Length: 336
Ligand code: TYM
Image (spheres, rainbow, N blue to C red):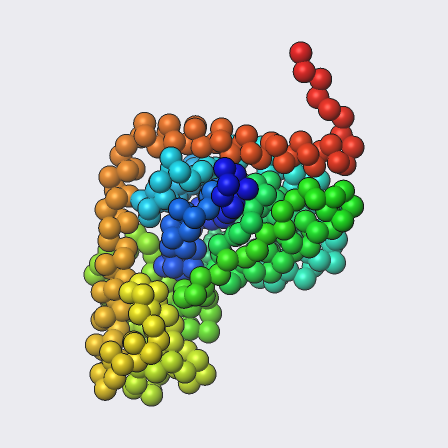
């Protein structure tokens, strides 16, 4: 608890271009929860270097992502928006937690298996212990809740296991966090292969909507979205996975329920439905894009918020880090 409020932590990688999946699965919920909780939202650049990055490009993308957090509606005076690399406690706690995590647990992580197969020439130790760093991110702030998309659930489970293991040895050091999965948009699928998640790294540009896509591109990609031969807007995950995905996107952007969407498009063709989905997405993304264009030019505002928020994050993170260090037996620092 901070000032009587429960704590929330989440993070996003600045690798690749953000997709509609990142927005609907995570960022949109972050904004919705930001009044209720004391929130920490990080740009997790330590995680990003588990795959090779161009340094300048990573820096540029990371700054864009922080700016996008604000453009999406997160007020940096109320929410702590910061770079993970500005708070050394993340790496320090990760080391301690590495010593409380079993290789057997890490071997089971599906994201590691996925990424290892995609980057076969660089299966580094960081990629392997990635979930431990994620646990450190969350536990440092004593987070009660962690809003994520479904693909991160396994990492949340291991975070809970590590926290419980540490607590069972040393007493209540860490809050055991709960995942927060949105009712809609928790798993947005590819527009071209609806059995695959929409991903930043998809080779087919028509498979993903990127947050900075202009309206014409968005509409064009939805027109090309893969559907089926059923020719009716019905929520049937087996026969109509493409349509279900479009219904999820539409529902998530408009707040309409599945039943309402089925009624709205009863007797109407896929062409009309796809256009409506495209327009709904444009109306959600356009204001975010416009605000981003304004903010990115305001260098001093962004710089100030980066400095202030890194200090705030560091303050809370260090409190937990010191507690954990003491428990495992590191000596107190001598102060002058
Ligand atoms: P990342 O950067 O891959 O994704 C950021 C967030 O977007 C969600 N997401 C999706 N949601 C719905 N549909 C999709 N197609 C989709 N694609 C991505 C993800 O679930 C995530 O919530 N390891 C994390 C970052 C991280 C983190 C943390 C998250 C590091 N430390 C601590 C929470 C707490 C990642 O790579 O997310």
